[in-house]
Amino acid sequence: MTTLNIRIDEKVKKEARRTLASLGMDTSTAVKIFLNQVIVDQGFPFVPKRSSKEIRLGWDAEIEEARKEKSYKTARQAVRSTLK
Image 1 (spheres, rainbow, N blue to C red):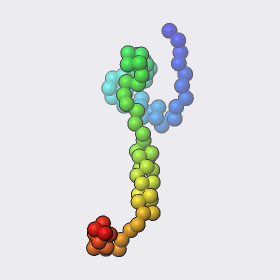
Image 2 (image 1 turned 60 degrees about the vertical axis):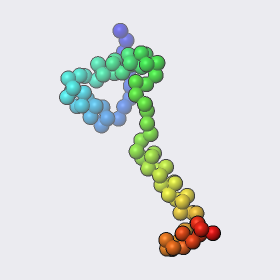
Image 3 (image 1 turned 60 degrees about the horizontal axis):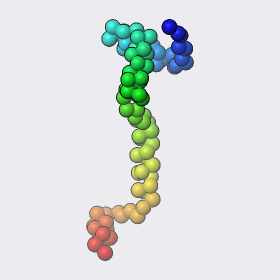
Image 4 (image 1 turned 90 degrees about the vertical axis):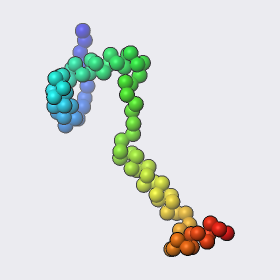
């Protein structure tokens, strides 16, 4: 056996510990399960996704880009423009 030391935000540690305890598991056991599954899967045992903040920033950038494009004051103007 060996020891693994990691640095993690205190709030994350407390919330994870609480959640794992509700599942009848301690943090050490959960980390062991995770690392063993990494070996089995030869990668993450889940699909990492961007955070909602990153997704929102992407959406905001798309909206800003759309605003730079030609805009219309009325629907009629938009329709006329597409028919030309």
